[in-house]
Amino acid sequence: MAEIKDIIEFEIGSALYGMDISLVREIVEMLPITRLPGSQKCIVGVINLRGEVTMIVSISELLSIRGQSDKQNEKIIVLVPNLTGGSNIGIIVTEVHSVLSVPVEDIEPFSGILATDSGGFVKGIIKTSSGDKERLEVAGKNSRLMLYLDMEQILTALHLPCKIH
Image (cartoon, rainbow, N blue to C red):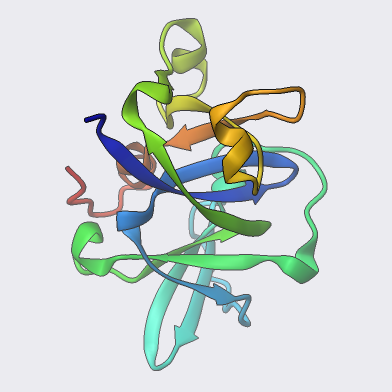
């Protein structure tokens, strides 16, 4: 039996991204962000999430993603604190779509020159049809490529604690 990964599918700008759902604690609507003076450009600031101070990271800034973002639909994906050394960390995304069950063999490793240019933040590429699980099995003209993010590399680049295995 093929190993399956459950991947949360989301957009940043107009591109499709994914990461392991096991890294996600919750998804929340955008909240007011308090800016942190002197922080890295990709550290947007902090929010008060039900009494917990949560650091907010702009993945689009870190990955140098350009393009329009629908600020009204932005969400925050809050990561599981046990995997981030106990820190509360959230990432801003344009929109969250769904959770897909993807056979591991359908995740094409991201290597070579492209991997070097991306800074190692992408683990692989998944061919998908956004929001349509039936069409996931039969790649047609509506299929899109999803970049499967390596959150361990992203947190390491931000000098944040990381316990993802």
